[in-house]
Structures are given as structure tokens and as C-alpha cells.
Length: 406
Image (cartoon, rainbow, N blue to C red; front, side, top):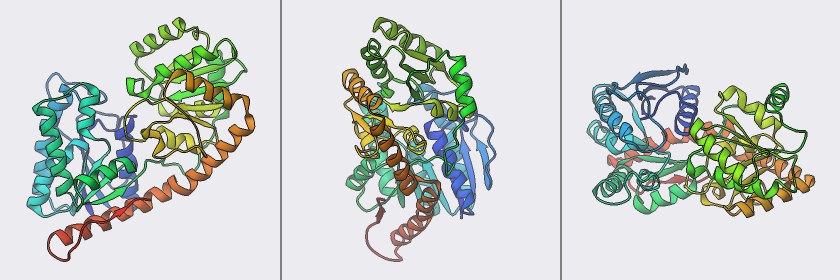
């Protein structure tokens, strides 16, 4: 098939949605599909087999865009939507796959050209608007919700990251097919970097004590402040403990560093800063415990799939963004507050047998449910489901859209 893939994101950029797009594009190429990717006018260079990268027009004064809704993103979406619509109408694509807000306009050319629309809901746009404070009420939020429903009901297939969003789609668009496509690392096996781990341990002055590692951005929804609070509760009893935070902007790091000092965790918390992806295996290798303290949201974070693959025990908050994937048999789960995180971390550090048991079960579950071959299998089904749903919609058959909830 020939796809038009509409991703209103910088590409490539080492963060959630662009990385998910990269993985899907890689798998589509491996499955033999040809793809035209339309993305924003900036991002790191990327070469993907069978993928041609096209970029929308620049907007004067906008040099980059951050995570989440913003006026800069809104401005970039205008030329993006114009070029995406022009491409969809002018070229003979077999299907259109639209990521996030691209689905809010892509249903129009898809319907005009009678091509199946695959709406990739990596997040719930109206919820993003509320969480970010960009639009908490009023006509903008109402319009976003209305357009989401139209996109869902117009799509031949909606792809979601986890079951929570899939259930919402089934409720709002019961005749639309749904496919749950969890994230996954493109590497079938985690490759430890022992030399890199030793290098970073020396560079950061880490003691020989236990090392807890967080990787990712430092936006408020990640809950890293909860982790810093937990470190403050453990500092006196575990002075050799080191909580290593990888990622974040300098201003975010300084705020958390000051908080760590106030809470008595200044010597425990170590901030490595933002680093290239090539360094991540080293930090995953040096970790005795990997942690995801996210406090809100619905999408399972991509990092937990990497964590499951490593053979290291995982501590995560017991919130829907995690419990769609994690359970007590493969991870140590705690309520999203510093005291609960501290107690759960203390249990893991004090019980090596429990840590080994959880780590082994996590890797087994990853191999069974979230490996790269499994990801490709699910994505291969997407094209079949979309074609079948579009044929039914065109009158070739009857019945509602199906779903794959595995």
C-alpha cells in the first residue's frame, strides 16, 4: 500500500510521539508499504527505508515547538493542514494515517477521495488542552471535542496506545474499528552497556550503593517531584542511595535540585541532564531499580516498555497510565505520593529476591506481548482492518467495525 502519514510533530525528535511515529514508519517499511511522511519543518535528520520525508512550510518567528499544546503548535498546524490536504487530494494514496490533531482535518480529503482514514490517537487532544491549561473551558475546548468525535466516526480505523483510550473510542464511535498498538523498542533484545555504565558512574561520582534511575522529560505530569520527595524520605536511612534523573531542561533541573536540597536529598539526587539516546543503555544498565513516577495522563509512557525489556526491577505509580500495561506481578506499584514511593522503593532495595522475581517476570511479559515482532503483527492487521471497514462503509458489506484488543 501507498500511505500518506500525517505527523504534526518535529521529526525526528527524541520524545514520545515522534519516536512512536518512527517505530510505526519503520514497521510499515519492513512490511513492504511505501510511505510519504508529512511533518513539521524541523527535526533531526532521519533515513527510513521506503519512507519519503516531506515538511510543511515554516512560520516566521517559530523555530521549534515544545511538548503539548501551544500557540506555536497552532500556528504550525495551519500550513501543515493545507499541505496535508493538498497531498491527500492530489496523489493516489491507498490510505491516509493521521496522528493526533491531523485526524481533525484529514477525514475531509479522505472522504472526498474515498480512501480509508487511520486515525492514530496517541493522546486525547481535548484532555491535553485541559491538562496543559491551554483551553480548560469555552468554545475552543468544545470545538476540539466535536472535531475528535467527527474524526473518530469518519475513520475506518482508530489506533490507540492502550485500552483506556480504546474504550473511549468504542463509546463515542461504536461503529469504528479500533486497534490497540502498544509502543515497543525497535530492538528485539536489550543490549547492556557495562562500559558506559562504569564511565557514567565515575563521571557522576556515584557511590557503590544502590542506584535508582529515571529517564525522560521533566514536565509536571511525569511526577519527578514525587520521586525527589521520596528520595528525601530515604536519605537518612540510605545515605549511599543515588537517584539519577536523566533528561530535562536546565531550568527544570535547577528547580528540582533546589527542591532536593530543601527536602534533605541534595546528596542523594543526581541530575545528569539531557543526553542523546545513545547514552540511555548505559543508564539502564547501571540501574538497580528503574522508576516511572508519572502522576497523571492516560497514555502508557513509552519508557516503561524499554524498562520491561532490561531485566531490571521497575517501580511505577499505580495510576491508569501505568496500570493499562503494568500489574503487581511484573512491577512494584505505589500510590502517587512521596511516602508511598519511598516505602515501595525501600521494599525493593531490601528484598533482592523480590527485585529479581519482578525483573524476570517483566522481561518474560515483554517478550510475549510487546516485542518488535508482536508490534509488526499488530500493525500488519491495521491495513487489513482499515480496508475491510472502508469497504463495508462503501456498501460492499454490512456490520460494525471490529477491534483487536490484544
